[in-house]
Image 1: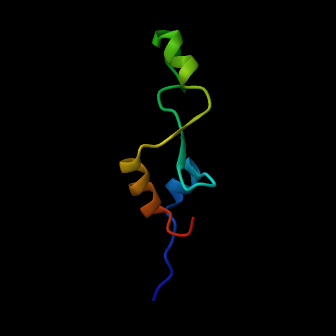
Image 2: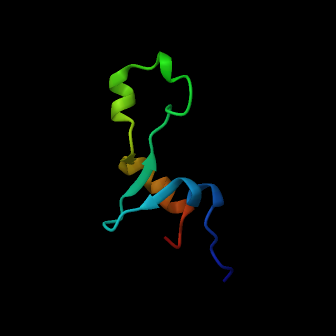
Length: 65
């Protein structure tokens, strides 16, 4: 059997927590921040846990994680 490779875009963007959840950065916080509400910018600090449907797809990209 050939080796399963991790998608390089996924390993740059996602990490797995100790319990197996997928942690990702919050979108829309790189530029054009003057037109975003303060509440959105505050809640977008740090990272977020992906929903189960999205995390299933990301985990398929990272078979060795």
